[in-house]
Length: 302
Length: 168
Image 1: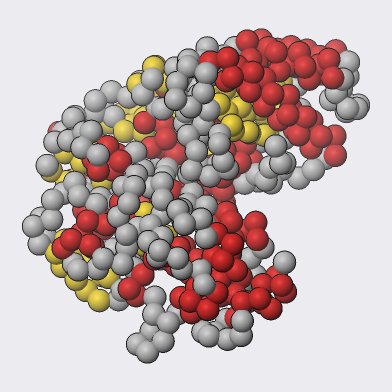
Image 2 (image 1 turned 60 degrees about the vertical axis):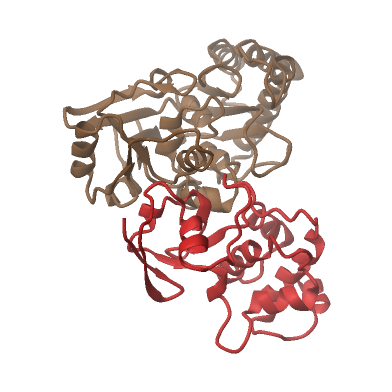
């Protein structure tokens, strides 16, 4: 086995171009499990942990609103500690990943490139319409996050490409996330749901995880809720939402799921639980909006 | 390959390291540091917790080559020359050690917590130790030990009970 240890991003891209079959490794929380259990023997490991650029994030001003550019090597612990106000949905989701040890190592770029249907970082990125920045010696391209995932553990990455960064619009309203599993820590999601309210645009974003081959949004639910909020002037006069609206939102979110039965749960349970998560997270997010609560990346208790 | 790194403050090298092996394997099998325990090999149990550049990680999930030139702190480095560290003393005093297998990982995780958070709440302690499994299920004593360590500030002071009560 070769172990490549590029010191710079350009060296890493060169290495990937010269060794298209190299397995990139950052936090190792997926790759090392496969190695330890002899499930995979890559001919080459490409260590990305020495590249400073990958471990940085920045906030850039755009006419339509600020966008966070998060380097692919930023670990979950820093997303929680440093981006909880700008990206509360992603920060809440990050807090549900593994344990402190895992969050200190696991990265958003690795979560994307592994493309597990249960990736905890994916639903908030879907709800915020994030873009994924891919780079190779040939150049840079960005893809909407929903186009990045092409199947179970499959992505749009070409053999010579690496994930360089994620571009996420800064939150302009409340964001929430919730996850079902047997305990609060060390859990691969049974299902997850993220919601983002965009009061200025009058729209709603959703992200569903672990209920389909790839993370997805519930477009019908988003349109229903946005329509309901606009028609009844609820953005301007934010009274409590009627049960009928919250219930319908949950139904439409559940309808967007296409889950399977597996060791973690049945399709029927996942669909049911997803509807419950959708109702609860909408309730939390709407309460935050009504109360003008500062969004902090903290979470109500399920 | 030859691996050079700093372990518990001492420059160390290991030879004939296979690129795909874990830092945990290097520590235990090549460098004679068996304090970090090998159990799940998938980051689930926390018994191999070590500091990597002063951040607690699962040594089983760090590729040996990733540790090149880095600074590693293991449970063997917690105690001083003659005395146990604060968390070690608190674990002993409180009776937080049963079979002992999870203890090294818990000590490193707890050491990190009490250094970062001056007076952790019970919820903070639980979250900080969520990645460390004790299959003797001795969690109550472990909680008490961490409260003691967080409250004492110096080794071997007082009983666990009183400082625990102050913090709840």
